[in-house]
Length: 273
Image (cartoon, rainbow, N blue to C red; front, top):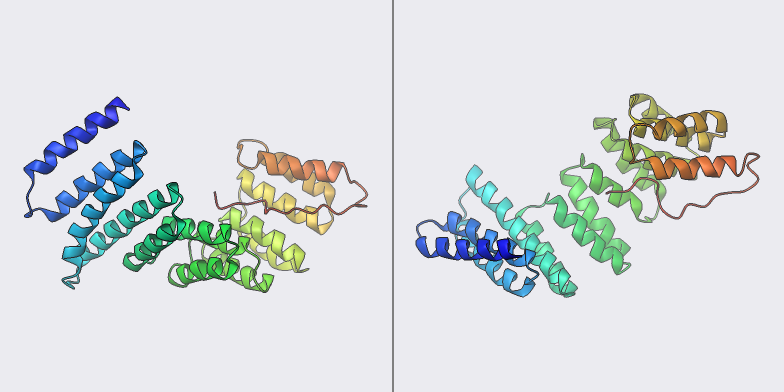
């Protein structure tokens, strides 16, 4: 805490040395000051400073100049607005948070952290339509983002086939996105289209524990417990990421060897985290 306060004092001294001739540098220093205040949980004060930082950039961006530097400054502005929105979330002002998250996306439509945060607010309000829109808008611009695709596929859309289509588009480009592959296997099993998942499984062959988990899950749904157990056990070696899901699946198989019962999983086995 003492170090943060010392940092805040140092930034204040530096700001006094700067003038309007260096707006981008001043903006960066204001942003650092806002970061310090946020770390001290002074969220309202931090937002006041972040706003000063943003206004300096906005003055430049309003001049409608088009070059790589302006694109960089737009990304900076988007990130500052994201921080303001996050602080509003911290003080439970979600309406203001939404306003600034949306403003953040107006400066950078592919700001993934903004999309994720906005998605979580909409999901907490059970607004599935807006959840789907914020993800689909992003994926229309950048269809290769695995995390956003996982968020999109985690909500209950009108048809699972829509989510499957979205995942397939990304796996066509990035076959080794195994979190998406696991999600695809789960969805294909629900709609009786495991052959679709098998095609992508063959494209993703590797020695990674995540791939072993995906293979195990495929064989579990396909009714081959021996191969499923073998691959789930392999996925427990060398990585803790899939350890708990793998042990859950192993338990499900061993406790139900004759497949007399149906296990209902409310949460997907692969998450966006």
